[in-house]
Length: 153
Image 1 (cartoon, rainbow, N blue to C red):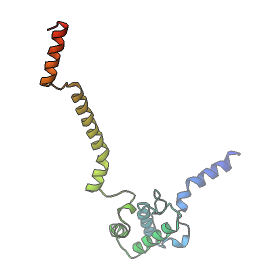
Image 2: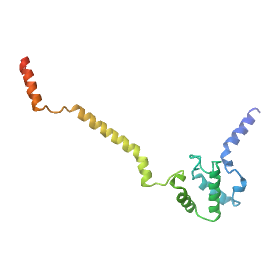
Image 3: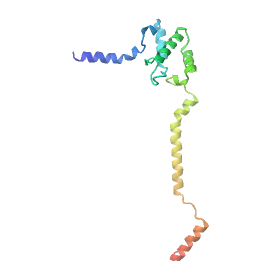
Image 4: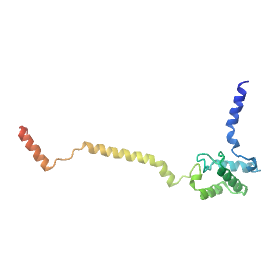
């Protein structure tokens, strides 16, 4: 019996994201449209909270963006149209999962390319370190003089 309040509190905390919409009046009357709006909002980044979706954030800007998404859904626009509108308005950064493009491929490949460049530079430096430069004519003459002075050939 002592565990019941803790269990109830745990269940409430687990269900917290379900209460992301602050005001029930924000929700669309059509349940399918509301689910679509929530799914689209879950893919959009809160521009204030950075790593939260607009559905999870309680920032004022996130609430405004949820309202905009619901307006577009209510107008009957497709998910792609809504995402394109949001991206055109707020940039690629508004997407929590950016589209695959040359820029994103370069971004993901850059650590591997930097590691390969570092390994190539280190290998080149190690190879040059073991190679002794040839003696100049003056150095050869000096070595010969020192060898003759000490009696070595």
